Image (cartoon, rainbow, N blue to C red; front, side):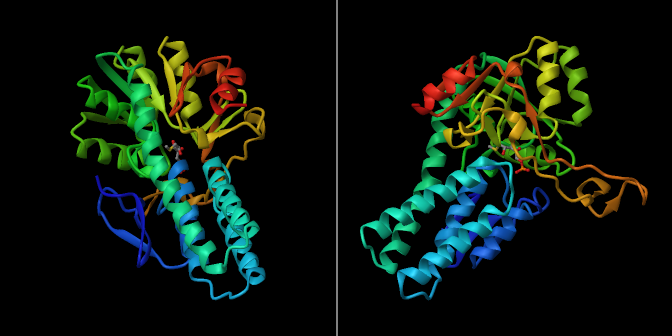
Amino acid sequence: MLPTIEWNADGVVMIDQRKLPASEVYVTCKTANEVAKAIKTMVIRGAPAIGVAAAMGIALGTRRSTATGTKQFTTEFQRICDVMAATRPTAVNLFWAIERMKRTFAAEALRGASVDEIKQRLGSEARAIHDEDVQSCKTMGEHGAALVPDTARILTHCNAGALATAGFGTALGVIRAAAGQGKNVTVLADETRPFLQGARLTAWELIKDGIETTVITDNMAASMMRLGDIDLVVVGADRIAANGDVANKIGTYGVAVLAREHGLPFYVAAPLSTIDLETPDGSTIPIEERSDREVTHVGASRVTPEGAKIRNPAFDVTPARFVTAIVTERGIARPPYSESLAQLIGN
Ligand code: MRU
């Protein structure tokens, strides 16, 4: 599997997810502003991957700072954090990673570290966030694989794979781990209009791994369930509220309601960095509205008439009552989530 993101001597390097699967090209961001733009324009996307990119962008930006005194350095650091925070509002992993970098900065400043020492420490923290994310996905995958029968046809929505994380994936991590244990898993990937993360990214990743994948358009899932062609659903998440409400890619809510109607388990796989205990329920999760063009066009072709109004909310909220279980790196949470999530996080 090609790396999703890495930080090397040239800058923060990421595979351009807008171009997949047609071409596998890498973008090198040389400044924090370039990293922020890459997040905003979806060169890199997926909640954990956005968090990793922001942390690396902050480390890169501060590394390039010419400030000599801590006062000016602190102002620059704060500005870079603000730029990162303004990229995408829904995935809480972004804010979790920024907070972690801020705590690192504050601890170093408190102990009287020099500008150079703080730069080093921010760099190692960003690398740690990356490496821990890969490890979390692998552990989560092992926990989640226990929920997958020996033979399973699994529906997933959007891309919650290696591309959406530092590696291995959350929902696709569960699928990978089950396949790795010798289970006979096949995947139905919702195409996921308008950005087509399922058709382009999930199918690309899974086919590379030799996992049989069938792409369906979003409006086919109900019929597939009715035909008995799906055994379970597993998706990722962008933010999970304290009561277990799950914000994820637009269309997830519909899939969850369908799964309930057809008696199928609906699982969510996400690291602890996606759980937001500060947000009591889904009603206050900010939902990003993206540009009309993602809806009016497929590639370069316009598919809607001029003058038609457009809505493009990028995420929806699935109420906790539709979620069978939430798989994390620390184990599996079951309802009532207000208790099980707090317990997992250790509150
Ligand atoms: O708009 P995107 O592509 O960033 O949305 C991604 C999703 O909704 C994923 O399902 C979610 O981030 C989970 S990623 C492990």
